[in-house]
Image 1 (cartoon, rainbow, N blue to C red):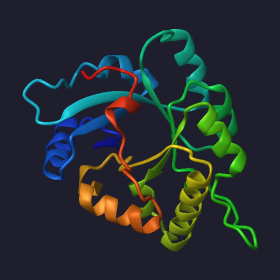
Image 2 (image 1 turned 180 degrees about the vertical axis):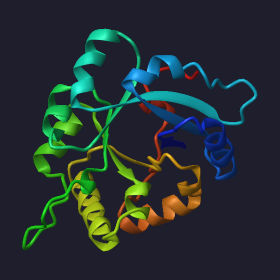
Image 3 (image 1 turned 30 degrees about the vertical axis):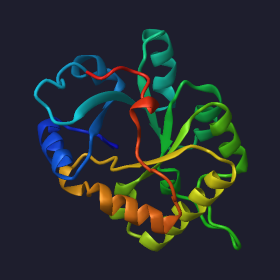
Image 4 (image 1 turned 120 degrees about the horizontal axis):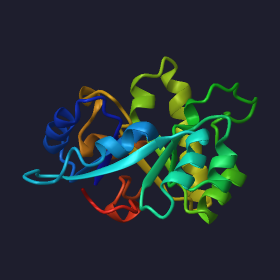
Length: 207
């Protein structure tokens, strides 16, 4: 059970909170320009939980990563944007998250949830994980809409057997929640199996 967070020089606080909340590991996502400098900063020596590192990329970064880190085992996460199909279909991303956060108008009979059967099939074919963000729910001004979109996306991912995970995806340790609370919430929303990132999902070795 690995949580995913986006630190801002507060890694130690994240580690302490993650330990208290019952996580076995934590994955720090860094922007591409910071990744090389920070990936070795926090190691597992003396830590109760395993520490992983990854890149928080956008569609422009993907091209740089492919060139500068060619052959490297790097975990790459991308937040949803207007380039989701390109990211899922043509990039080296491992995870795309917060698809329900994109500002779209809901249709009359269906929510504009950011995901459809085409993207689900592509994600499965290209082994891209679909991630759901706890922070998207906590910080949403329109929680009922976001929850509805997440439920719809979970349903379509289950239908097409697309791999899904949940994570905090927050820059603030106090926004993290316990393993039990997260499993309970997303169980209600439709995730019926294990919901967290696993070590096998991360291509790189631990720090």
